Image 1 (cartoon, rainbow, N blue to C red):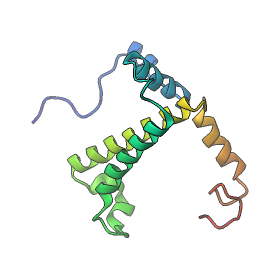
Image 2: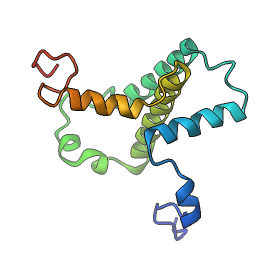
Image 3: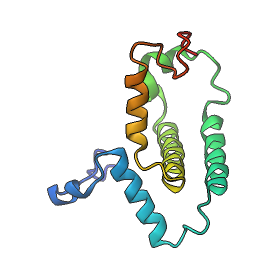
Image 4: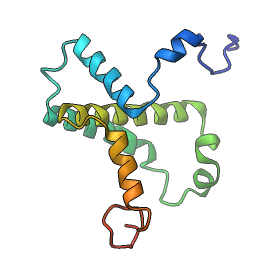
Length: 137
């Protein structure tokens, strides 16, 4: 099916400037999307976590029978996967990310990106796992 689309999204410069460039901007976009649909009533922390767990299950299902050590995946990333499987993975990762950002927003964490950054900066001298014990786990 050659429709002339090489997979890139055609976006004008004006539209490009409207796209979120930071985690905070993405969180605002997700909040506005939910508010425009009057979903705030349903977006309680509990409901968001449960929905995110459902999406995590769908993400886990993709890897369920892949085995623990898929050397091709480690070497090539998902480039060795069929296009439909890569698309499915991308969709599920996006779904989980949206729920994570929405949860942070609903509970009042306004800049999850900054928190992640600070975690890495704070752990720069450590092992990077956030617990400060140096074991990498």
